[in-house]
Length: 412
Image (tube, rainbow, N blue to C red):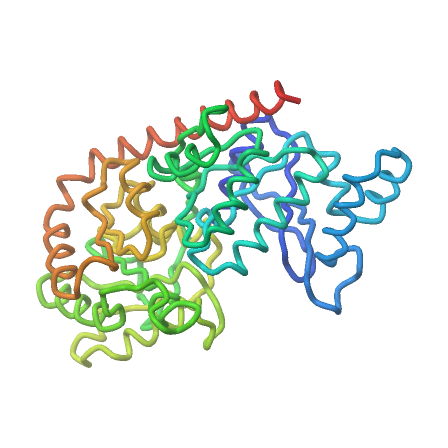
């Protein structure tokens, strides 16, 4: 949702208020409330599902089959019938531009081939209908599978515009694309996400007033906390993440007078491997009793704008969800990224904070904690330059999206 809201806003502004719709897999196709130009707006959603209980015209296999049929036949009347029977195809057909962002980092087999192939087939329906697609700013690779690399190459070569959000991804995409077209470079779109500060932050234990000014924010990544989707160190971390978090929290509380605010960024039900909120509760419960009064958990399920607002209230941030880190960096809050993939480095590098990434695949618990404590002591030195860099990224994003739309319109 952080990516989606940022992307919708950037596209709308760059097109002079053009209409935007979202295409993705969800249960019911209800619209999504997002802020566009500072105002809340209900953005229409065209959905697909794999469930047998969904209406056939929204079933992904129907959409895929009809997209293939649409591509193979050239009889205008039949194509009109296909589009009329398939909302997904109708919206794609009528759109001036259709782009993909893959959750920012899923143009890769990092999360498994099933997820990669599902994303490929979704984008392929657009290529079948329109002949091309736009690749919005995202990470490309890594590719452990030869099949994934071949599918990525196929799709990139059928993309009218390709944008990477970091230099390493740009090189990966350019190698796959070849010299025919340039891969553009852009900051992550979430640098432009509007922050909305809630009047009161709901926490356990309850806050009597505003967040204290010296508070340290700690975003706990539920996926890392629970070992990844296979619950068996999927990301090959050398860091023992739950143990590291407990030790880090204790050291921060021992060596400073600051309170600690545990901030989920991906909300999910207890038992779900993605649940940051459950991991936050478990972390606090595992701390010594003498520290628990200084540790609070954000318990309300804030939307993407509000959780960014909450993050903007802390003095210093440590995050393992990249968009929790971006929420801090984009507001000038010094932030350490505890990384599980290479995507963190490129994004932090874009605002001059490359040395503020602690890669959980390369360091152990003690080294990671020592580096974070050292960076905490340096936070004031980077606060001013970071705010300047954050403002620059917002201007750069506006320019990139203006170029995306102008190139797409010109090629059409």
